Structures are given as C-alpha cells and as structure tokens.
Length: 188
Length: 188
DNA sequence: TACATCATGTAAAGCGTTACATGATTCC
DNA sequence: GGAATCATGTAACGCTTTACATGATGTA
Image 1 (cartoon, each protein chain N blue to C red):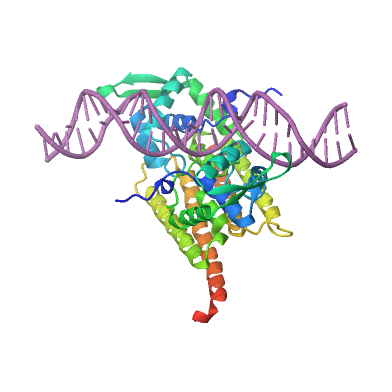
Image 2 (image 1 turned 90 degrees about the horizontal axis):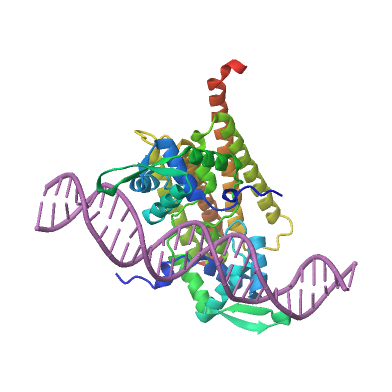
C-alpha cells in the first residue's frame, strides 16, 4: 500500500538524464549540459536549453544539485549532491520501465494499407533512408576517438534499433512490390 | 520559402491516428476509438478518452470529421470527411519523420555504467523481461483469428523491435557478467 | 565594428496524464 | 436494487516546443 514517494510515479526522465550527466562527467553548466544532450544523448533523450535551465533551478530547490561556482559571463556550474546521486540510483534500479510507445514510424507502418502500393513504397523508402542516416550518425559517434564512453551500451542499442528499422523496411518493400506487381501485372 | 501549411510542421499524430482509424474501419464513436487505441494501436500510439473526445470536437471544427449520427446514450458517431481523407494522405506521403527520440530504456542503457555490475545486471534483466512480455503480447495480437488486419506491417515492426531489445539485453548481460567476473574474481 | 559564440533566461501555446464528474443501459 | 459497462465530458497539472529577449566575450 505505501506508495513510494512521488518521484517513482511521474515522468522525471529529464531530471534523471541531467543527474546522470552530472554524475558521469562532473560539474557542468546548463550550457554544457545542453551541448551534451545534443552531442551524446541525441539518440536517447532530447531537451533544449529552455527546458534545461528551469529544470536545474527546480532541482537545486529540491536539493538534487547545487550551484558549485559561478564563472565568467554569468556561467553557473552545477554539481550533483549526494541526495541527487541517491535519487539517480533509486530511479535506475527501482523505476518500472514505462510501456508507453509513441512512434511516428510505427504509425505510418500501421496506416500503410490506406495507401496505394506505389505511395506506400515511397513512404517506406523514406523511412529506410532515415534509418540508414541514423545508423551512420551513430557509427560516427562510436569508434575512433570517442570522447564519450558513457554511452557505450546505449550506442549499441541505437545501432541495433536502426538496423531493425532498415530490415523491416526491406521486408516491407519486398511485400509491397509483390503486391504492386500482382495488382497491376499488365504494365509488364 | 513557402512553408507548407501548419499541419506539416506540428505534432498532429493523434489526429492522424484518429483519421486513420476512421478511414480504415468506417464511422465510429469516441468510445469505439478509445477502445481501438487500446486494442490495436497500443504498440504504436497511445491515447485515452480524455484526449480523444476533445480532439474529435476540434477535428469536427476543422472539417476533418463530422458527426454522422447520434445513437443511444448520447453516443456520437463520427465519420471522416473528404478533407480528412486528404489530410491523412498528405501526412502519410509528405510528413518528414520526426527524429525525436525519448526512450526510458535507452536512458537506462546510457546510465548503466553508473551502477555496480550486479545492479546493472538486475536492470538489464528487467528490461529483457519487459521486452519478452511485449513480444508475447504482440504475438497474441497477430496470428490466429486476427480481427485487425490493418496493423500487419506495424505488428511486424513491433515484433522486430521487441526482439532487438531482447538481443541487446542478452549481449549486454554477457558483457556485464564478464565485467563482474573480472572485477571480483576472488569469490570464485 | 560586426559577427560568432558563450550564456542565461521568460512566455505562450500545445500535447499528454491523472483525477474528477455525470448519467444511461444492461445484466444478475 | 446493485454492479458492470457504455458513453461523454471538464479541470488541473506537468512536459515539450517555439518564439522572444538580453547581454558578455572573442575574433576578424
């Protein structure tokens, strides 16, 4: 009956991502964290500075981070607190993964049968091209210099997911082409 | 320069999902559509009745659907209009897939290195169990009677994605177990 | 001096969840 | 009569995006 405290029940993932970055890489400013989201968290979670700055203020109010120092140009360096570390740990081991899915690609897949085969082929071809671009982007993040080691497992997952989309697109294109051929065989 | 009209630029996916259902299955009430989301769109897009009812009203205002008839118990049957069909078609072929990703599982993958190997193993084991449950759920939706044919391609995609998560979890568990063994070899 | 980058914020609007609220009909 | 299901809605809150806004510092 005793429901765990509220942080187990609500979204919170932006907080967790920020705590994770501060935990892994040490104190940083909102500006640094915004860049980190763009650079190494882009395939995992997205947030802009307009979301990050106010969230850091709220997290400081809640004692999860604190302003460690203020540098040039009003730069504020945040550090994770022991309470913040504990919160991060609790979320990682205690938070039941949410089952919500909201995928535009899956929605297009769902609605594909509403289109003519030719149009459906165009849609899936575009999805495939996107997945290939994502795969290439992730590959670049990975191997050579790789200043970001934190994302090793997430990178592997991202690559596998992109490959899965490519494979699905290939299989779907094959099915659609069979259908296009059988529904209009006279043009051969 | 001429940006396409606003519907190309914003979210809209709930609208599209509703239009797709009305297009595929014919006129339906908000209640029916809510059930359809739960039953056949659950692995694609999620929405509850509190979101669907007001959205249908707005869509009627915009001329994409209309109240075709009113049945017992205040039941309102919505039908897609030609304009709605056109909007659905335009989105399918014209909307650039959004690149935003926000995945709690990927976030956990990213933060895995912040945990002890033992804890990380527990987290990944749970992710794997979830993916297996999702896979089984999708399998049930698929084969035998299958009153929902519309979701054929989306179902295939969902199964592939669930399998990918299972495969990633297995590979990650193997890596973590090697790490756990090498960091504490004396307990053998 | 002008432009790029660094660095921080606020405000408005839309999307999504949870809680609240109501009433009709059907089945036991 | 009571419970389950049918059927629709509103309100409050939180998350996310877009647009607006400001000023400091470095560099060509």
